[in-house]
Image 1 (cartoon, rainbow, N blue to C red):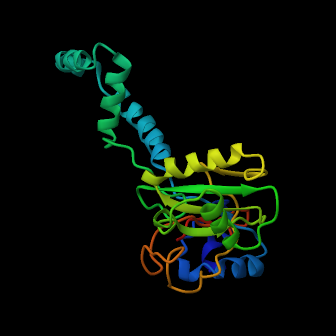
Image 2: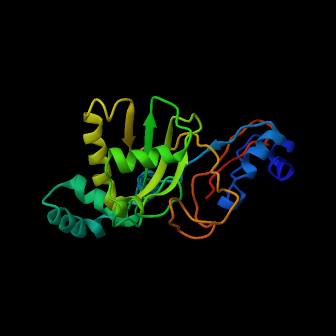
Length: 248
C-alpha cells in the first residue's frame, strides 16, 4: 500500500493520495499509520451544499463563455422567467443556475456514510466518555427519546479525545432530537457541560470496535454488510506517502 501510494513522491512531486476504506478494513488504518510513520486526516463525506456551491461556480464560468451574438435569442425567455419570479432577478438567476447544475432539491447527507436523508450529530461533553453506552444513556434517560427513535440512530462512534461521539439519525427526526437536547441543556443539572449539534465537519474519531466485522450498523440496525461510502482518513506530505481519503 505505501509503495503504491508513494510513487508521486518518488517521482519528485508533492500530492495527495486519496484512500477509500470499507468498515471491514478500517482496523488497518492505525496499522498503516504506525508502519508508515504518518497520520491520516479523516474527511467527512462531501455535503450537497458544498457540492452545489462548487457546481454553481463552474456554471458561472460556463455562462460567461456564451458569445454576445447568442444573447438576443434568449431575451424573450429570460423576460418570461423573470416575470415568473415576480421580477426578482436574483431568484430567477439562482433557479436557472440550480437547474443547469442538476439541482432541483437539497437533501441532507450523512458525514459518516454519505447516505441521503441522514444527518450526523455530534454529542460533546466537558468530561471523559469511555464508552458509547454513556451517550446512549444520555439519549434515553436525559433526552427521554422514545425507543422507536433510538432504534433509528446508527453508527455511534466516539471521538478521539474521548469527550464526545458522533452518530447518524434520519433527517426527519433531527429537529425532534435537537429540540429535546435544547430543553435538556436549559436545565442546569441535566445539561451542564453537554451539547448536541449538527456539525459541518467530522472531528477526529476513534477506530470503531466492530470495524473488523461485517455486522450491524450501529445500535442493532444496519445499512448492510460493510457497505457504504463514509467518513475516511487522510494526510499528505512531500514524500507522497501521505494519504487522504474517505471510507465506510
